[in-house]
Image (cartoon, rainbow, N blue to C red):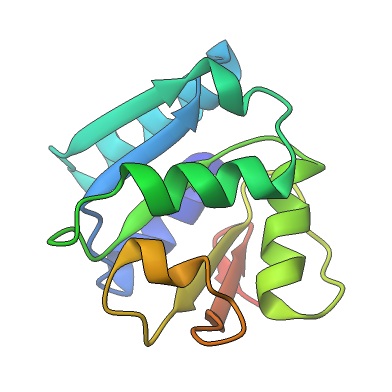
Length: 134
């Protein structure tokens, strides 16, 4: 499913500036598949602290490890933490199965500002599952 999802992202013209992934073998493999399918040559962080991490840990890594000139990040992680982040930012209950991509936009000027969710609430643009927008 990762190839289909990556192909859907590429077809829709998504540009990725950085990949952040758990250091687990499976997430690194998924990140590799997406990078290959989308023909990405971008900075990448594989972090042990994201293995089975809660939503707040994913949010902290994104907001603290991204450079302000990087506008788009692909985060590859594990449930339930990554699903919790997606649902929290979307402010709704969503089915977040394997190879789900949630695309968010924010009015924040810096990544650090994204953490101030009362001011810069990320808005869910689309959800891609099994290579299809749902």
